[in-house]
Image (cartoon, rainbow, N blue to C red; front, side, top):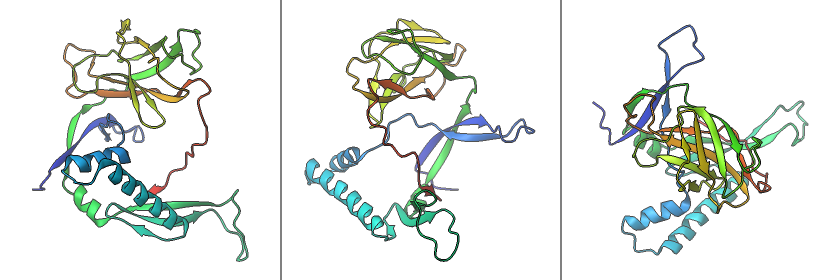
Length: 259
């Protein structure tokens, strides 16, 4: 029997690609926590008893990342204890004398798990929570300061959230309404919800939100029955919410291939 030391909790969701099969499900990892950043990694090293100061650790980690980026830019394949970065150019090249055309070709990376990471994942088990109801969703967000549902929100004022099974319920860690910034920083709603129904929630936008784009996230144990979900369900609004001018739009949606 496998020696599992960690477990991923997953929801089961109906596989819509196999409509002819009624009992075919896919697994969705329940990940309600924010992404770890270099600052968090440095703090974890400190918590493990490192004698190196936090600022020094963070500087070293950031330098490590920079050197990897520069090496890849120079055309090197870089192998760490986590993964291997391999340069790749995509696009079609017509003729042996074809030149690089940024309109047709693109530089990117293939990312392959390192043997150490594959070994680590072999010790991860999976705990199935239950079938995730497809009806739970955030349908529309209206800014009550303007009465508009354009995605622009007003800090310090209320938004009206319409949807299905969105009532905030349960006392598990992480339950609530949150605005997630582009830097992955979570801004919780701390003001009392003036409306908290299964189909409609009124929430006060934190007054300290700066200009930028945010993802609205609801974490709840509500289940439409008298019994709460064992683990919180995480719902996110599919459209970004904007404060002010929304900040810069320089983000690149292209992502590397992970094998």
